[in-house]
Length: 220
Image 1 (cartoon, rainbow, N blue to C red):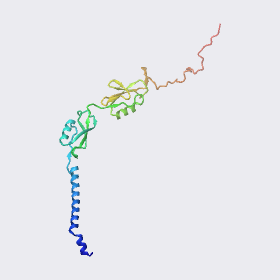
Image 2 (image 1 turned 90 degrees about the vertical axis):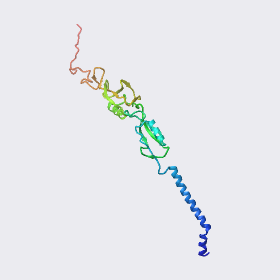
Image 3 (image 1 turned 60 degrees about the vertical axis):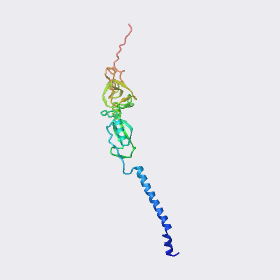
Image 4 (image 1 turned 180 degrees about the horizontal axis):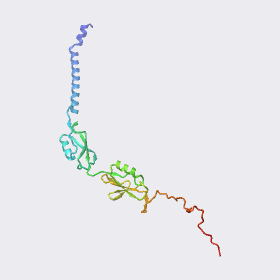
C-alpha cells in the first residue's frame, strides 16, 4: 500500500462519518453532564438566609417558608431580658446562600430559667471550694451564714429561706447562701480550736504537787 492509498482510506467518507459521530456523542455527553449538574446544584443560584436573631420562632418559620426554606430547633438557652421562644442564634448565619429546602437550625430562648444540680459540697468541702464550684455553675452566692461548727466548713445551703441538699435541682436565678462553721460550738461561743494552758495537766496542783492537800487525822 502506497502513501496515496493510505491517506485515501484514512479520509474516506465512511471513516470520517464515524469519527464525526463519535465526536458528536462525546460533546453531547459533556454538555449533558454540565446541564445536569447545573440543574441539580443550581450553580450560581442561592437563597440568602434572612437574619432571624431576636425574632419570634413562629414569625421566623413563616418567613423561611416564603423563601422555600425550613426551620428546626437544635438547642435552647435562657436570656432573662428576652421574650420566650425568640431566636438566640442560627445556623447557617445571616446572609449565607443556600439551596431551596435547606433546613435552618436555630437556638430558642427558654420560657423558664434552667435548673442546675447542686454539687456534692455540703459537709464535703470548705467554704472557698464550695463557693468556687457554685459560681462556676452560674449561681449567685450571697454572703455566708455563720453557724456553730468547724471553721470555714460547709454545713448546709439555703435557697429562698429553705435548706437544700446535694443533688437538688435549683433555678439558676435563685441566689444561694452557704451555712459555714464559725469555729465555735453551742451558744457559749467557745472556740473549738482553743487549747487551755493547763491542758494535759489536770492531775497536778497549783503548787506543783510538793504539798499534800490532805491532813493526817489520828485517833484519840
